[in-house]
Image (cartoon, rainbow over all chains, first blue to last red; front, side, top):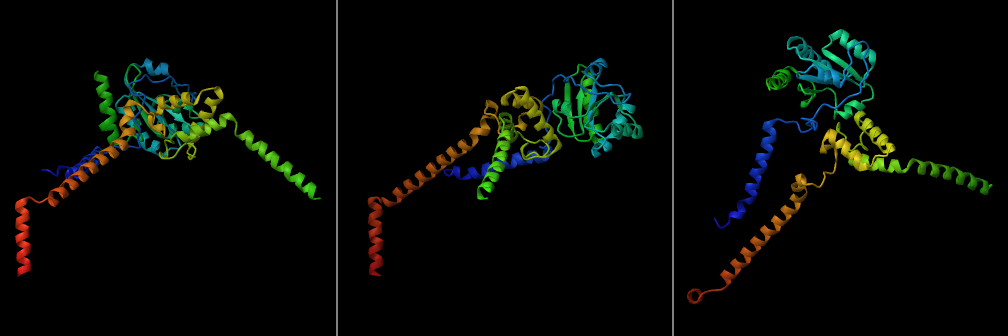
Length: 180
Length: 151
């Protein structure tokens, strides 16, 4: 017992093991940033109209008065094409209003995607030079914000929404916010 | 002829000198300093200066625009931290929240000194114990040594 300090390195080692194991078990990707805008009001965005689609601005986001999604996408982004199917599912089957921000995209390419794969968006706006996305803290497409009825940002999903993301993350959060 | 060549080179070099000075306007120096302090969020261990990712280019343009509008470096950093979080700063701020991050190395060094001190003190005290023999022990030792010699 006198040489208790000899066990300190071992103790230190186990503390490190606990830290590393926590990272492994939680399976959190540290390169994915949480939004700093969480629980803050969605900032006003200045977007341009895409063809004849309804323009997304902060007024119609607040007007619908129910939890909704804001999705940043682009026709040149492959993961966005993968997630498109699930955006369609959410808007068609779960009646969720999705607002789209078309990020640094070509106008005709964007319209073609919506015509070919369907339009999941309630309203949509173009961010040609990416400045509005920077305002939202977006650092890669696709990203999806969950907004509550009062227009506050409640969650940010980085990367495509796949089936399990939709079922295990997005829909439960939306339901939880709805019940509040 | 020699003089003409010299004059020719003098003019050429002075032009390039003027140009390089023009490129290093106050804004550009400040911008470059900022690029070095900001993280590219796409390739996350590179600074904006090192990165050619589309988002990094956009952020660089934003920094330049803001500097031209007259914002200070601190204001621009604040603007970006409000949107991307402190992660965008390559050098974390010295705040209460980050105090452990900054002081941990010093704490570990002090702890190391403390352990070394303990260890060395134990060792020296052990030496003293063994070098000083009690009267009884001395007698015993003498007996043993004598016997060894006799045998």
